[in-house]
Image 1 (tube, rainbow, N blue to C red):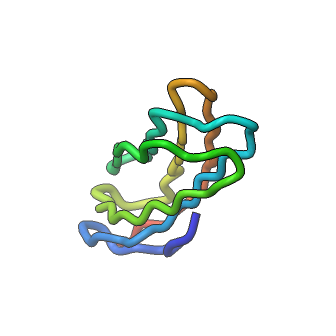
Image 2 (cartoon, rainbow, N blue to C red):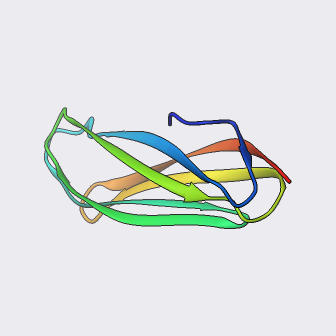
Length: 92
């Protein structure tokens, strides 16, 4: 996950997430879901071949100030999923 650790409430922040398929077969139906207090993002990534990486760029808006725990979850219809949690400080 690449992006700012501090943002201003109500402003959009740009992030970049890399999703790697370390398995032996193609991962299909891959989705990226981002959740956190006062924010969210959900989008299809598609298919990721074995040993390849997909880069997803997106912007999210934080609506509540404070320390926000943001969870990035990549899941696949045939290969399971993985999540990473980061903290973002949202200023008033």
